[in-house]
Each structure stands twice: as structure tokens, then as C-alpha cells.
Image (cartoon, rainbow, N blue to C red):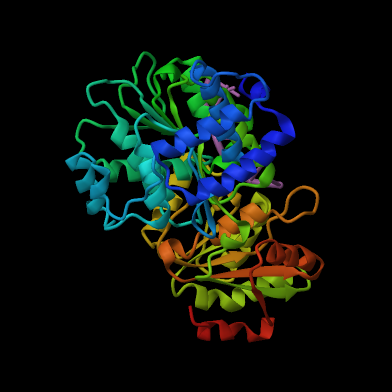
Length: 481
DNA sequence: AAAAAAG
């Protein structure tokens, strides 16, 4: 309806003119009136008397606002795009957690985790998420910059402690990540004694007939789907905050789309939807904007995505045996801190684990072929520093936050099906190090025929991946990071 | 290719 009122090219030109005005003005009521009157005057002949037809003006204004939101950007700094669904409310950011007027217990929880000030993404995202009435948000920010804490805070702040049923639902792509996010909820909500978390993940079996009374549910898609539709333990209609962590994989057709969208569509229209990830491929971003009603938006240009605190290198190798040798050469150095080694397949990860173990190197393996009990144990040992080197698949590519990880090795470069580099996965993998501004190193073991893929990745992110010679590998101890 | 539900 609104779009019918809008008149094609004339509208585009008009909104462009408006756009320049708009970005120069502060966002005030006056501003909204200006937009409204401009909108009214640009509806050809459909209005004679603006005084009498407030509704039409409103509709037109809304349509214009939508257009503005698509086209124009309210820039808070040159590399970040922030769009607010309602430009009449001021775009503001917070420099302290106090400004958010949170409950005392929640504030205590935040400080107990060692957070003193909001991170960059939190400065902008928190006021948007906590605004009343609740608004949807699609947010992109580099890995390790505090996305999790941001949406956990949003969930905790919206729980009604008097109501004993699920009110907040967060979906994550893997078992390990769901566990980790749940721990953040537990820590941050430590002083909110009446708020509780439940894990909807594999292995968390509920006896028949049990009711879910916890307010916050963290889970993986399959189990959540089971709890919602088959066992009817969660009433999606009552969910107030819905979070998709690693949102791009969760809605990508290659990924978990079917499951996530089925859940998302069953939510009430009142439910606040929050989508977070470090990466959104263009097509996925467009899809996200289609399925999320009137979203606020925080977006980064892809050149801004690679973290300059992570040094990237590659070693050119002949074959797999060669890559293995190169890896063994640096084993001593990578165990100074902790390291994650990524392989493309479970089989390859297993093979590498067996080889390294036989050569007397202490490593541990985490992949989807293990039982959830084994997986929980391994990731815990790694977090505790009892294991220094983790060999894994893409199961650990995203979200896993272990502060002591200083080195990431891509034993296999991440590829999509059609021999194309998997840019998103690459970025997430190397983002396992360099958390919260710390320094990190990333090594890519590259077979000669895979070099073009690596160069494509380098070009895509406009980053610098330096070559190291295999015989110079002991040089890495001298690399400053 | 990996991940994600049980039974």
C-alpha cells in the first residue's frame, strides 16, 4: 500500500534531495514534520489538502522513510553504517553502562565480568536494543568485539521474573557455541537470582511431562525445533526477544535456513528480533532485511572486517605431507600459547590428529563425529588450558572464544563446493584469535594449486597475507605479535 | 564439506 503511493523516479530524485538535507539535520520532531511535508508534496495529485489527510501523509512519510533507510546512511563514523528505523528518535550512543539505566543486579553482573565500558559495537547496539518500544536489529561487527555480551544484556534486561516460561530464545549454529553463550548469560545474570537459563541442545534430555519454566533458552536449531513443535515445551508466541547468533549461517540456504526460518515465522509480531554476525554475504544481508520487519541496521564495509591486530601468513607447500611437515616445524612455537588448527573435513582432522600424536605431539581433536559428551569434555579441557592445540573442523570456526588462543592454522583453506574460497569462514576462523583487540597470528598451509584461492581471499578483504618459506619456519618465533 | 534431532 505504502509503496503504491510512492511515485517512481520522481520519488527517487526527491528522496536524494531530501537525503542531503536529512543528513545535515539533527533528528528531531521538526525533522519528521519536514519529511512528512516533503512526502505529501511529492504524491502526484493524490492530495489536495494536507491538513485534512494526515493518514495519507503518514503513509507517504513512512514510505519515504523506508526509502531513505534503504538508500541513505546515517553515518556515525566513516566505516560504520548505522540506520535507524525511526529517524525521528535521536541516534545516540552510550559511553558507559550506567547511561542505560539497567537494573542494579544486571549492572553488577556486567562489572563482575570485567567489562568497564561498552565496546564500540555495544555503544551503538545497546541503546537501539534497549529502546522502548523494542526494535529489531541486524548488526555486523568484527569477531571478538563484544556481540555476545550485547545481546545477552538485551535478553536479560527484558525478562519478567514473575513469569515462569521461556521469554527469550537464542539460536546458535553449534553445540559448543550454545554452551558458551549460555555461560555468558549465567555469569552476567549471576545477581538476577530469579532469572534462569536452559540449554536446548543435544544431550540435554528432559523427562517426559516436565515443563520448561526457565525464562531464557539457548539452543541449537534441531533441538529447539523439537521442543517447540513436537514436544510443545516452548510457546514461541510468548517469546519477547529472539536472537540469531552467527545469523548469516543461520539463515543461509546452505546452512540452517529451514529450521531457523520455521522458528522465526512462528514468533509473535511483538517479538524483538536481533541478528548478529561478523559476516553477511550480500545476498544473505538482503534476505535478512526481507525477513526482519523494520530493522535497525549496523553494518561494516568488508574492507573494515579483517582485524589488523591479526597478522596473516601463508606457507607454500607441494602436497599434504609437505603441509604436515611445515606444521610440525612450528609445533614448538605454537604451543607457547594455545592454537587451533582447522581442517576441511572430519577425516582430514582425524588423520592429522593421528599423525601428530604418532610423532609425539600432544594434540586434541574436536569434530562432529564425537559424542556430545566427548565434545563438551574436549572444549572444556581446551578452555582450561589442559590442551594447547586443538585440531578441528568448521564446527569451531565461529564464535568460540578462548582468550589464550594466539595462533590459528588453516591446515586446509576453507572452500565452498565450487572450488571457490569461503571468505566468511576464513574470517571467522582467524577471528578465533585476536579477541578483544589482543594480538594474534594466522598461518595458512597452502598447496600450490590452492594459491589462487588464497589470493582471492586476500583481495576480497583487501588485507595483507605474507609468504613464509618452509625453511624459515623457525623464524616465526621471532615474529612479533 | 560441516553442522544440526531423536529414536
